[in-house]
Image (cartoon, rainbow, N blue to C red; front, top):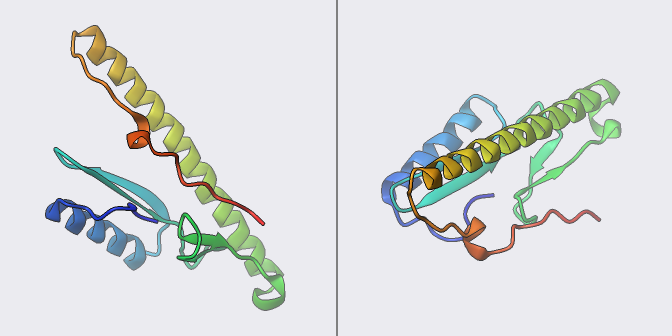
Amino acid sequence: MMNERPIQNRKLQQALNQVKLIMTRFDLAGACMLVSADEAAFTYGMHASWSAMRRDSTLPLGFRFRAKSSEDGVNLTHDRVEAAVHTICQLCDFGFMTAGHMEELMVMLRDAGVEFTHTPYGGKPLPRIVSG
């Protein structure tokens, strides 16, 4: 999944494309948020060969969880499921840590007299993962 709107800043788009290429080249999973002076862009790269997560552009986040021991064998399927869970837990931890740090920085800015307003997610609801 990436931004649901076109990225206006050409350098931001190029940088995000490079991050996606790096994830693919090195067979890594992850998430990346890049910020320019006037725009932000993100991507999830959740599909690595060692994981049970696979690309699926029909789903809101662009990937699905797929584990079939009848096709891949019990050991490989177990390893891929374990790797997918590891990825999810690590990204969750990083998301919580990032949110906490940024909230603390916003408090520090306000305490220093910097006035600003922020509407999370531009006022839009977050995309949801629907199982079933």
